[in-house]
Length: 126
Image (cartoon, rainbow, N blue to C red; front, side, top):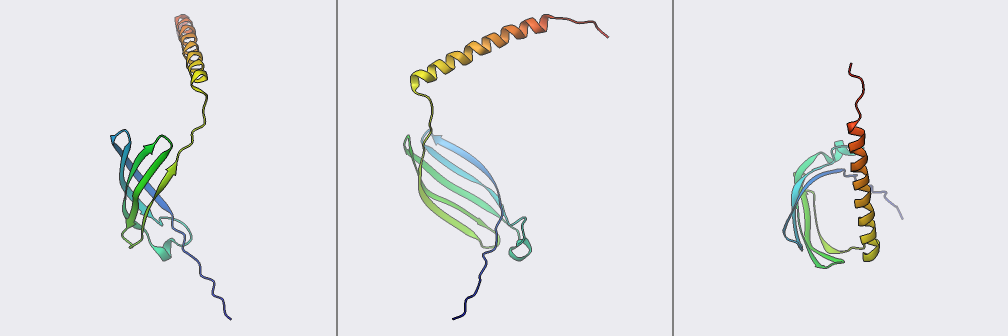
């Protein structure tokens, strides 16, 4: 039996996105994309230009549903996906978060006070 090694071409991507939030729980995004602008296979695959689009809906604080996310270019390469995203953001408890904010505001007041003292010092002019 004969085996054939098949290599998938590498595709480099450069994307620029604009995100729009019509409501706090809905995200619409659109943008432009350049595929295979660099890399070892750039002469084989060619450079393509195209668009990116998608929708995301935050169902719960920790769950985002993406019904459609897609991209395509002038070389007839495309990718259409959908899925869910689980969001986990570790952080301090609410009461310790309040203490951190108080500490930060106290630090900024102290910085402002020392800034006034430093700014009032004058040295010899040249």
